Structure formats: structure tokens, C-alpha cells
Length: 386
Image 1 (cartoon, one colour):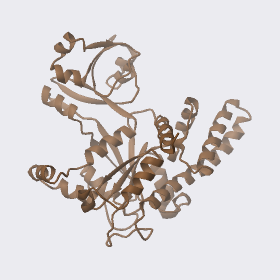
Image 2 (spheres, one colour):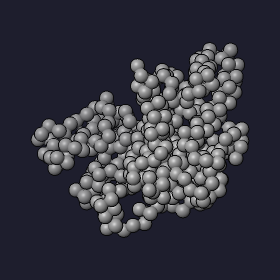
Image 3 (cartoon, helix red, strand yellow):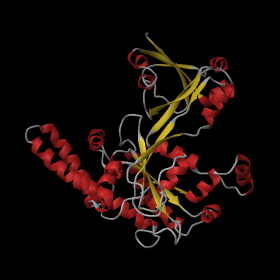
Image 4 (cartoon, helix red, strand yellow):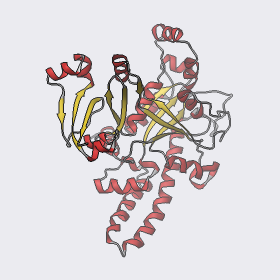
């Protein structure tokens, strides 16, 4: 088994780590002056302070941004409802970390607590040269910067786990069931200290995952690396650091990486639609923000199903793998407590056939019970006992 394949297989298992709910957040993390707040601004059309010095943004700023989806847009156009509600991604801008953050450097303790409060991470990495924008480490070296952040998160988890293991070991003398939690702490500590690997790369059993989820470790969170390049590099689709980053992030670690340019996105956002189309058609350049949003949503382990009609078209956020009654509970508690069945059409079938009646005639309108696992993009009608 190659190293690449092994890491990818382990990484997939780590996707089950995380909170169970649907009101989840993804945090934008990185060193100072890598473009985090500027990215947050253009992503959310908000006006968070973005300045050329560390710690310009101290308190985390959170915004909700609609998840782009052609299926949702098609349903809205098809039904022309009185109301439409898209799925949203909750994004939090977290101030820049620096080396030594785990020991409190650069307001590190506060910033690390902000990371603990989110459920996945956009790790912003600087891959552009600009003499007007200082780099806290003195020069541009994306892989070094990634390793600095990852090390700080590992060290913070180690400090937390060592204390937690000590307390839990004392409790285990009276409560034997606590011994399993001690063993999970020791297994995680070995990964973090000896192997220098993040917890999300571990192979964990269901009970171990349950324990890890209660600990909310920083290195258990799914990470998407955003590689911030210059507009010229983005236009040419070339950057001197990309081959090295591709090897390190994607091939060796099995994680996701999205090259883009905050500066390009800022300029593109200000263009009218006609100029945007010229940019798309003639220069083959477009915003990558929709892809970033969709990837962040997926990194949280989220999908959505649709309810659709003349009154409303709505995307309902659920965790991937959720059963029909629990998904129905997102609409109303009766759909979960008094669940009878649900009637389901796949979006692709509905679009192809054009109507509910046509789906029924083609055998594509199916009645499902409590064991049904909802798929992304299902169009569902729930029935309950009340």
C-alpha cells in the first residue's frame, strides 16, 4: 500500500469525527497577513477589519453565506414560489495564529479557543509575494507555514489531553467505564507526540469516536487548505509553490487543497454581470468562491434535501447518513416523533421527467420507511400521525 493511498483511507475514516448537529461552523485559520479577513469580506460581503498588521481581527466574526446549488435554483425557477430558502454555510473568521500560540503567544489562547468552537477549518495559506504586506516569518514558505499552524494545534491538544488523562485516570479507579476514555487519550497522545500526526488521521472505532467527539480536539477537525496566490498566478494557473503543496497536502496527507486568489476575487466581485461574462468567456477566469463554499459545507459532513411547492422551495440541512424520521424532525418534531412514512423523488428524476405525476408513472416516486437514509438532493414529502 502506498503512503498516499494509506493516508487517504485513514482520512476518510476521520470524516465521522465531529458534532452531530446541523448548526455547524467552519473557521478560517492561518498565520497573520495571509488574507483571511479579506477572504471573509469578499465571501460574505461584510466589512470585517482587514489591515496589514497582526491581530487586526481579534474577536471572531461569523457570517452565514448561501450554498450555491443549480438544483435549488432550478426548483425555484420551476415553482416560482412565494418564498425560497437556500442552505447556508456558517463561516467564522479567526485572527491569525503565530508560533508559540499554544503557550499564549500573540493572544494564542483566545484564538485557539475560537478554533475549538468551530467544527471544521479553512486553513488559509499564503503563496503570493508582496513587499507591502509583511510576513511574520520573514519570507514566503507555504509548507513551513502549514507546519507551524499544525504544530500549534497538536501542542494545544497534547496539553489538553495530558491534563484530561490525569483527571480521568483518577476517576477510573472508582468508575471502571472511564478506563476506555483513558486509553483513547493515550492513543491520541501517541499519535500527536510520537507520530506527529493529527487525530483526524487515526483509525478509530465507533466508541472511540464517541469519546473523541466529547473532547472536541483541534486536530480532529476536517481541514480544507486554501492556497492564496497573486491574481497573475491565478490567471496563469501556475504558482512556484503549487507542485510542492500538491505533493504535501494532497498526495502525502490526503487532504483537500483549493488554489485561488483573494485579490482576484475582490476585483471580480466588483464587476457587473456583463464584464464577469466577458472574463469567463474570453479569459476563462471565474470566481472559485462557489466551489470553496460547497467544499466547506461538505467538510462539515452536511447535505440537504428539498421540500418544494408553490408556497416555498427550501433546502433543509442534515448530517450525511441521517435517517428519514430525524431528517423530518428538522421540519417539525411531529415528523420525527409520529413518523409514518415519507415520499421521495431524486432531484435528477424530477428534473428529467418534469412533474410529480410523471415520476409516479415512471416508478420514480417512492414511499420510504424509518430505515431510509436520506440522499443529498432528495425531494421529500413527510407524513406523520398528526
